[in-house]
Image (cartoon, rainbow, N blue to C red; front, side, top):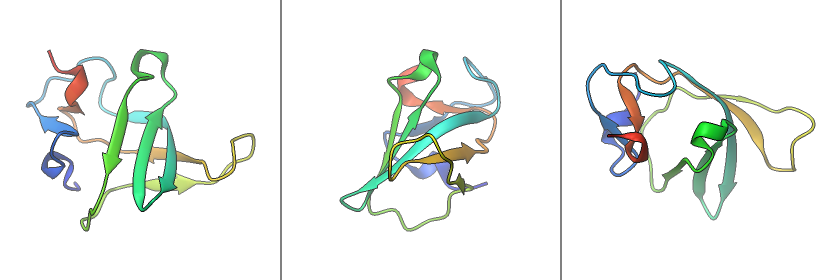
Length: 92
C-alpha cells in the first residue's frame, strides 16, 4: 500500500507496533510550494510532525478533500497509513 517505507527519513517500517495514533492518521493539511509537499497534522500530540516529499515519483494512497474554513492553498488530507508505520520522530 504505497511506498511509505521507501521515503528516507520520513517513515520507518518498525513492524506491527502502533504507538501513539493507532492504524490511521487523519486531519492532515497539505501544502504544495516550491514543488515540495508538506503534510502537517492537526493532532496536538503530533503537532510538530512534518512529512516532506521532494522529487517523489511513486504513488501514495492519498485523498484530497478541499474544504472551507482553511487557509488558501490548504487541503484536508486523509492518509490510510499501513499498520506499523510511524513517523521517525515518534519512534522509541
